[in-house]
Image (cartoon, rainbow over all chains, first blue to last red; front, side, top):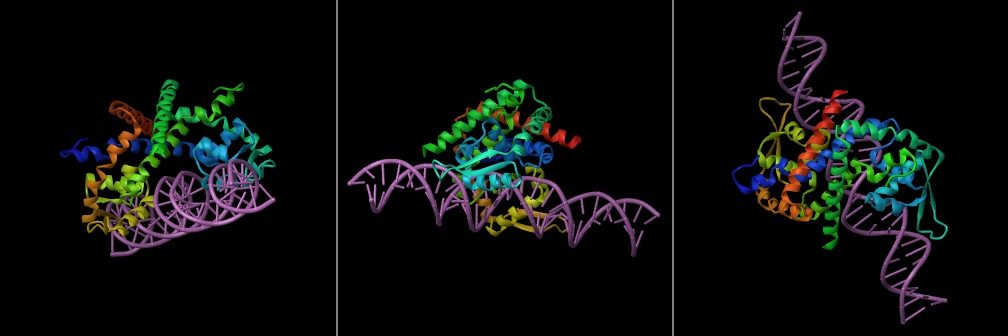
Length: 153
Length: 153
DNA sequence: GAAGGATATATCGCGCACGATATAATCGCA
DNA sequence: TGCGATTATATCGTGCGCGATATATCCTTC
């Protein structure tokens, strides 16, 4: 795995944490794709719905804060969910700048079908629940440190 | 974190391993971006170069196998690297179907500058080397199990 | 050596991510 | 009250990922 000069070990693909995260994310996406395709959803659309299923009627910015995505990503995504009839978008009455996203009947109903997805993914990971919790916790901590560092500069 | 009905805990965003991986990947990308911008590279372009710096003159398919990316992603990416003058693309003489990617002088020279990137990222993660190795190993194992499962069906 | 299948790469379309910029509403403060 | 600054969302352009399809080369088998 290591080579002769120091730069080689440093730059070896398989030594990169980032590549491990990057490729695991793609692998997870590949695992989700056939399951979500049955619901007609993409993975980011599924994430947005997870947030709305937790609490309906959130602002675009609130959803973005949870997903760490800006409106340049979310606005088109939410418009697609609206076009599918899953959510409604309306300007807030108190503050006309804000856009409130609320689930339609159809969007709420999809929650029951979506509940079948996590167990399938859990099985596909082949991890114990402990493994999952630990890995999740470590990744959340990593993300937090990375984001804190980028804020600082 | 858990709610009253079972679907709530199952579907809570913060309980999803996939979201932890997804958001950690984005956070890492955000950390890399300013460093790679100094080299004029995107993150996937950097990954392709890592592979060529390990061994020059690989086929598109070989690079794709390492990155788990197909030619629909790689061909345009490699053409952009070619347009930047970092790599050359030529058909193999033995097998005209294959396209060999080789580093230009400029592409090889960039390796020295790129060696500055991993230490910066390592610092930004705030992880110990042990943490990194462990996390990397677990993620590689997860990816492997996920990909093995998707092959099976 | 011609036909059919397999292999390697390329092309196209769509949906993210995200930097940069725009627009409109609200707030702060003189 | 009015005006500059801030805030919330939207728009635009570029570069991935990836499913679907195309094209060209090679390999096999008769």
